[in-house]
Every structure is written in C-alpha cells, then in structure tokens.
Length: 519
Image (cartoon, rainbow, N blue to C red):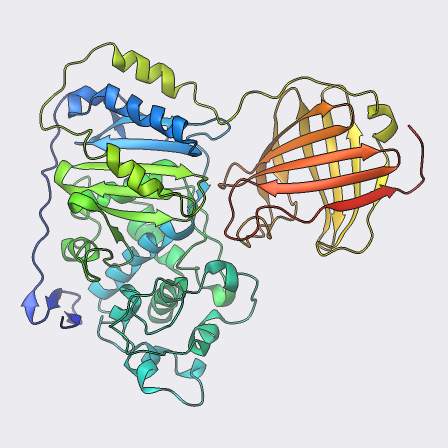
C-alpha cells in the first residue's frame, strides 16, 4: 500500500491523500436528539436521558454490569452516551464522578488532537521528516532509516523500531527524552512494520512543542479543554517542559466521554468545529490494516477507541451515535475489550425502547456500586504493645528505614521513612479515611512517582497479630494491600497491588522495634 500523506498549505487547509486518492469521508450517524433530557449535571454539562428513550434497553446495561461482576473485572467507572444524552453511568465506591483518574495511554488519543490542530494551522506536514525538527539531538551518524522517518510514521506507530518503549522506562529518566528517542535503533524501513511504542507518541508531543512553543497541555487548553468544559485535568510536564504525549494525563470519566463524543460528531462541539472533520476521519481510517488509525485503535463494526493501560477507555460507535467511557483496574491480557464488544453495540437499537421496571433497577444498581464491602470494626489485644513503637529495617532494595503505627479508637496513623523522606497515611478502623499522601509507590504503580496522591484507606485486624490495610489511590487504577504481621518485637511487612505492568508485590520486609519489648 502506498504511504499516506497530507498536503498542507501555510493557510492551514489540508487534504488527506491515500496513494494519490482523496481519503474517503467516514460514514457517521446523524446527531439525533430524540427523547427528552431528564437533567443536565452541573459538574460536566452533559444532558441525561433514560436509556430506552435513546434506543438502549436498561436490561442490556444491567446484563453488562452482571457480567462484569461475574467475570471479576475491576471496573471503576463507566458512562454511556447515545444520541446526545448520557443514558447510564456509575462509579464503584470509593471512585466518584468528580475525581480525576490517570488515563495512561488513552493520553495518546488526546495528543493526536494537538497534532491535527497543528497540521491544520500549518505548523508542520505529515510527510515532514522527524529529524528535520531536532538537529541538536541527532546522533553523529544518522542512518538512512532514521532519516526517512516521517510524522506520519510516528502517528501510525511504524517508526522502524524493533520493539516498544513503555512510558515506565522513560519516567525515571530526568534528562532529554528526545535524545533517548534518537538512541533507539531504526532497524527497518519506516512506514512498513507496526510496533506499538510510547516513544512515537512522545515525539509527536515534542514536535508540537517545537513548532508552537507550547506544551501539548497548554496548546490544547484554549483549543480543546476549555471548549469541551474540561477544567480539572492534570498533565505534569516531563523533561524540557514537554507533555508526555503517550501518558501522564489525568481527567474525569466524563472528559473521556467528551473526547469520544467530539469524534462521534465529526469534531463539532455545540455547533462549533473544534477539530477539522478531515482529521477526525483520518484518525479512524485503517492506516495499519484493520487495527490502528492515528493513535486510536480500531474495533468491530466501525468502532474506534482510545485505550489506556488497565482499561481506561473511550469507545466510539459511529454507526450508532454512541460512546462508552470506562476507567478500570484490569490486568493486561484479560481481553476486557473483547468482553465489552460482546455487549456493545448489540445493546443499541434503531428505535425507542419501551420503558419498564428495568429503568428503576438500573438506577438502583448504579447508585450502590462498590469495589469491596465496608471495612469491619475489629480490634486486637496487641494494639497497646505496638502502638507508637518505631520499627527499624536492615538494608533493603526498597530503601525503607523505619515504620510506625499510632492507634486511636477508630484510626491508625501509619508512618514510613525511606530514601525519599517521611510519609504518612491515615487509616480508618471500621471506616475509610480520605487524605493525601506522598507514600513511595513507583515499583508497584507503573513507575509513577507523584508528589501527592489521593488515598482512601481502611484497615482491620484479620486475627490478633495480622493487621491488613487497604490503600485505594482513587485518582489512579492502583489499590495496595498491606499485610502487617506482629510477633513480639518483630514486624513482617508485605505490600502488593491490584494491577501493574511489572511485579505486583514487593519483597517481604522484616523489621523490629528500636527497643525490644515482649507481648
């Protein structure tokens, strides 16, 4: 197949070309406004309606929720939109609608919005060579393959690299990630082999910054985030002030839904063209067989999706004028996407459904979702012996120095000292406590090490010597389980996580009190 190219005029107009033939316009369902909105949520500005009024049976959504539960998938939120209305939504406690959530590689599909806008503005062309923008970072010898790599090749993940680069590899690196990109061998001709890699998405972000003088986060604020009513996003910059184009974005579930809605409506938001229609067509075109467009994956029956690690999803069903957004904590390899596609778009019909008792059942169900039962109120006779004691640890790979537990009637303050400093988490006994923490977590959290994390924490004594804490980092997919076993002056400490790209548990730590005491 001939390579795709875009011809760009400096006035900003562009025409996408595929092998010399104009790219066909993608078929889109009309922006139908059937039924009546029940309400508009002030927090996200989206209209609500009963599912049946928009051709979705409440029973079909209930069946999806039943199957999620029976399959053991940890879905943390979902929002379903059709024909102009949110028809169903739910958050599994302690997740909430107003919380932002780390989106991982769903970020790639946001970065590509900036690329499309920059192309339309004449900042660069899709057939421009990547090396032409970054002369100061190039190796002493530029191979023919590297010299041939285009912006188009970055968009389609056909860079000529032999293997992927995960964001977790670059996050600990504090020097230039652009320089890191040019260290990767380009072993095959760009534009041929598809290799999914976050390195390509990062370079798209770097390219936008190079040509506009702004990070992608700043560039998109007046052009995308503000028009769509997305005020609470977080996207910390990486080295050189460049937004990590492959990951790093946190925003609400409703914002993922809005991203999908924008593409379902040909780039139009409330009557205004936010993204060029040619670009929204291009991202869902099968540039890589039937699997990949421009930083969006392709699904069955014309669906296309923004897909982040652990199942952060915005799935567009253009033939049905519908969008499904999900946040989750689901391990890689669980085939959750295939599971979703068994329910959607089968749940959509072309007519208005009859409203029945399932509407109330769905409402009741979505208002009571939770990931785990409430913590039990338990106690142990050894609390008075361990409370306030400082436990020291010999040299260990995690560089943990000390721990301390300070108990009250209904809470425990857990303190840990390590190579980064002192960290605390307030843990509820028989209840949950929400707060902020700086607790080190990168090894279990896909190498993210944030300055502050929101945590909802609870604990219980499962027996007289075993104290189990649950730390739900509710702006991420991660939930840590911490098991503390006390034996005389000794403490055995185990920490694990629900999902991760690497190990899901840390080596056991064994410490003892500074001054040994007997129970």
